[in-house]
Length: 113
Image (cartoon, rainbow, N blue to C red):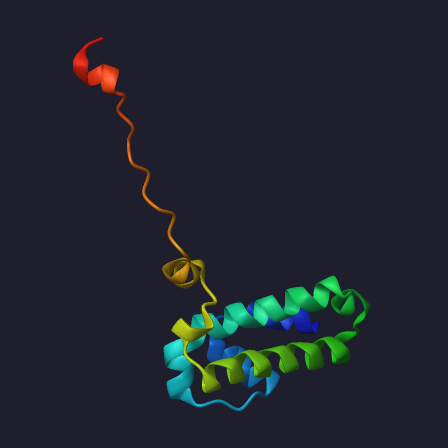
């Protein structure tokens, strides 16, 4: 069974961390599990663009996944999910809001002309 097959069989962040051999604190994972997994996916997509995933054998793929998961986990050890803004809802919360448009009513509409 390939590394990708093994990863597809996993269902929790803890299972990914255990399978890839990344040490973790359960409290950090309880708070940021979705954020950690999303960030790992972002890192893997970056590697895919560089062609690393296509050229990797099982051992290299395992090492690459482990590296990216450890990096993603470390991001949330040093910071918080809100500060990292992995999900769109957090990104939009701090995005500048456009000024509300003020309706224009021409004077002629008020005077009946």
